[in-house]
Length: 478
Image (tube, rainbow, N blue to C red; front, side):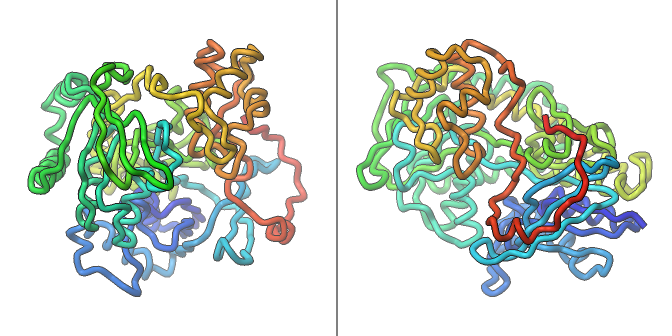
């Protein structure tokens, strides 16, 4: 019987586990959160359940079905509050997955497992472009604001501005409204012409994703009912305040996201939510040796296999495509990892859904691509790396003065991306700014900020208690 480890208990991970169980494999699912469901199905704890979860979440019944099927299945084990702190390649080519479980503020139990098959469904986290004043209390990523609204029913403020790019701004605004906040403006950076050109191209392809159009219509109706101002081609270019957020300056943006002079206006608010897309969580895939695409997602084939034998990937680490694509990819990955084939009848519908929603994901990526001139709204003293307090001026000066084209040396010189978050928040931004100032399109040393050999914070005492490997791996992390 095949032993499968699924990392991530969001839509892709749960779908993968359920499919693998249908095929007869034994499955273990781990997730760092307290509850399953991922960010998409984030919900209140069982101790204080909400009677409106089905209203607050799309496809809630799908989650309930997956969860109940797995929780009561003796062939499946679900371990929450469990993190992977490292993945190692062993001499025989298998993977050793190192786990730490328990309260992050207490002593944690450590163990190592060597699964027959590994399914990576680690998802993605928010990307928020730096803005002057974004370190003030009261500034949140869009995902964090939604997590508080969905998971705790707490609004991040009374008068909230939501800004960034992509359809995710709509559900964030809806969640804020349901939590009691007044959203005084939603500002989408992409221009209307660009969105129309990519969203409306080949409209017949949208027929297979008609429920997505219905979801969008529901969010638009929410905006209309709540009289929420929505502007396209605009962005927050500065955040004002002393002890906390007091106001923002918004401006019209050109096609490359550079602010148009003379269009600035100030809006009073006490909270700001920024969301400029998502960054896939790639550290485990990189540590396992998985090949990445040019767009920095995990490369998979038609069966969700990665370039590493026995390792599969599904969900937002292969493309930012939403819950439907994640569910389809997860189902295929779980079924094939357990010994099945995409030609098998049980996953044919998932294969068709994956094809439809892959095209849908491509629309999102092109319609809301980050503009090349966004950095023009930065000031020299704008903090880029929050952990190490490295500002934009420092990054530019070091890159220009050293003329270095190696990311590693630039990071060591500036300390950018070397703080507590290890570049999860600022990594892609630091890369872009350093590359722009250095005049290179790719760093000569071939490194990226996705490489984190230690994938999660771990106390030295916990590390000392961890099982020790006696093998020396031939694998060099790229």
